[in-house]
Image 1 (cartoon, rainbow, N blue to C red):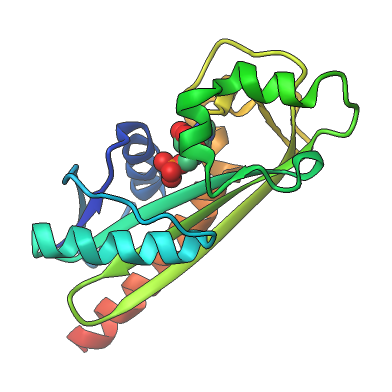
Image 2: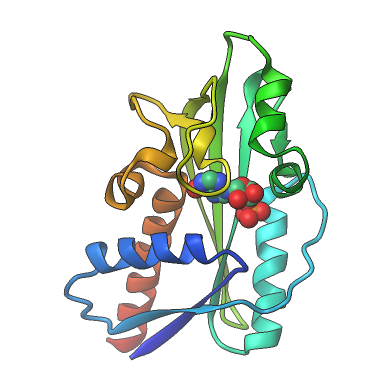
Length: 195
Ligand code: IMP
């Protein structure tokens, strides 16, 4: 059995990757288990989401002392020149979904993309994986989901992230794309070590 700790202060992210892991890894030949841990980590301020994730992975490892993955996300809105981007967490806490809608006003151009970056660190190897989902910002707040879920409509979907069920969100989300990459890499690494 191998354990990988998902270090985050956001349990919603863990619920999504746990469900995805169960679907993607039914046979679980590698006997991998993803565990949740929420160590207190101070994030660096950087204009690179990759830099933030890699720094977070190293800090989480120094606390947990076990192989860890962490995730950093950003919502990039085209008409706002990429804002909130690397400031997404701060923007959510301060202006929230209502503030984002006010910034866009009646603008018809509402294209946006969600980025996810996962970083794995086991004390030796640092490996980083990305996923992206394009879409647009709704004109109102749909009352379901967490974070920006209530205002983000992925491309080719009638519904916001928040209205999609867990499985559908996991089919198309930025998080699922990055996490699948990690899982593929991790299984290869594991098999390589054990053959
Ligand atoms: P974080 O810094 O990685 O936690 O993410 C930046 C911001 O994006 C936070 O406010 C999150 O709540 C939000 N966020 C990240 N992923 C999602 C998602 O899948 N749905 C809705 N909001 C998200």
